[in-house]
Image (tube, rainbow, N blue to C red; front, side):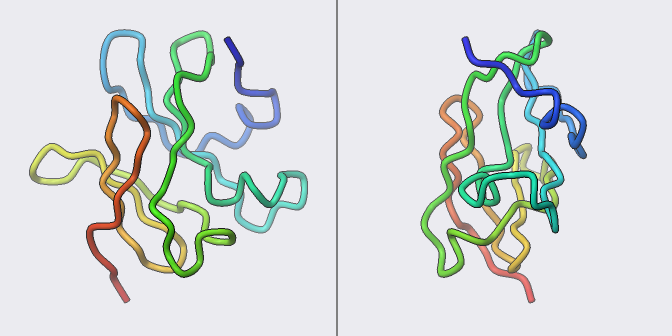
Length: 107
């Protein structure tokens, strides 16, 4: 099973527990040139305690899909895992698959 790299581990900004030995982590990739452009909008992962990757986020295609990293995530009032992109899109994350669906836009 693939693991997060040492570089990825070093930029974990947020970590939410979603089960026994299972976490969603968000990497801070803003302004970094040491990450591939394709990772800029796929910077949320589900991992286990050994940093093995269970899934990488798969966001709906928004207008800025290729250059729109996630900058914040939380559990909302309904108990859903949500993440917010730099351009203001709010995504609901399916914690089983990593699919992220756009549910709102905030200015």
